[in-house]
Image (cartoon, rainbow, N blue to C red):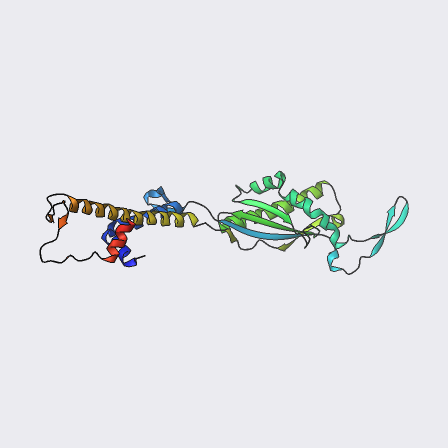
Length: 273
């Protein structure tokens, strides 16, 4: 490979290469952005949106905070005419079995309708139970996610979802006339935090387009060089050219002037062509 020869070819066809590079850059930019003419001023807006996410957490518990106790006291409860000692509170992990159910309720149509009361929802609202190391949802914890194309939209989505879900559960408990001491409480463990990017815009397509067009312009430069070399060869072999011809029609060199051997680089390029 003669890099010097290739460099000379590219320099002779530099306008083709530079034009191809400019076209490659333009197409790469247009594949990533679209031209927005709203307002009379051209603006570049990304074709694909990022995905931002904000998160909050809820704790399923009951009045009295049984998770803060090292033992549960027994209290007398009348059952069927008999007094039976019964734990005053449920075990802290007992509400873990409700986590999957409450996650589905949080994404129900009733909760979504509550969210829409404040206007269109800017993103998607997701709720998942917190799983242990074995993958089972045995923890009385829920993770709430708001996902949207902007950080503000993601934060508003999870805030409205949290408010709507807590309000929905409270309304159902009141309608069922459940005593306060027997209600499942939804305690906020982590309030909606700042959003972060979970799916950035991919730049693979613009990069591929730029390289493809650039390589095509380089290939065109070598094709033009090959065509020019063939034309020069045909011109040299035509009868009546400036160089003399022998009896066989072959070009003769001038008398007394020794023929210079063809440069090795040119020979290798002609062999390649």
